[in-house]
Image (cartoon, rainbow, N blue to C red):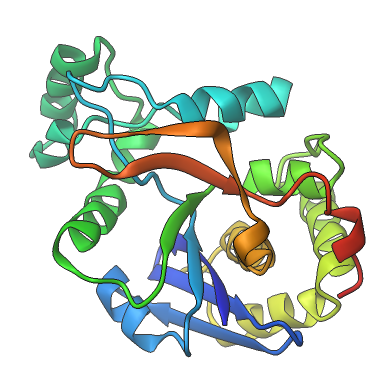
Length: 244
């Protein structure tokens, strides 16, 4: 089963697809618990940074490549905090640590997900995953699936959600039914509409498996040895994968 995972108000939501189109969804409060609840995972793509910047490796080239690909929608790729900033007790302390390490302060948006970033980073440092766990970015995946063109409307709008779901339907014929099932089973206070779409596009992307490509083409590693790469669908074979 190939999974896309996204952080959500209730913890983490995972959506899985296999080669035949069968699906599995799982919501868990913690990332470790989520991984334990996945059915025969072959690959997990998570919408969260893997490989964190530091004073010795201050840049994530994958983020720069993603912003170039997305053009005007590049603002959806937020600056990732340094690993040291994740230990801060409050926002101001995190800003001070990040400024000392990387020369920039944190946005409130970034601060609000530092707990999830730290949880995933700790998991990768202490656990042996049952399958590859790699980073993805939903808007990058949607853009590649859309022929390299970023979707114009925000996923927070009805038009943006409809466009993304229609695109997903081209690559997984049960996408709309899967999204509806997750929506029915979990309240919005646990899983937002865009969390469902992000996890689902992660699953669609993960299903390309060995054909997946990286942003950038030659990724670098962080000081802990984690590869800083955003996985994306193969640009040359996306058209062939529609309606499967």
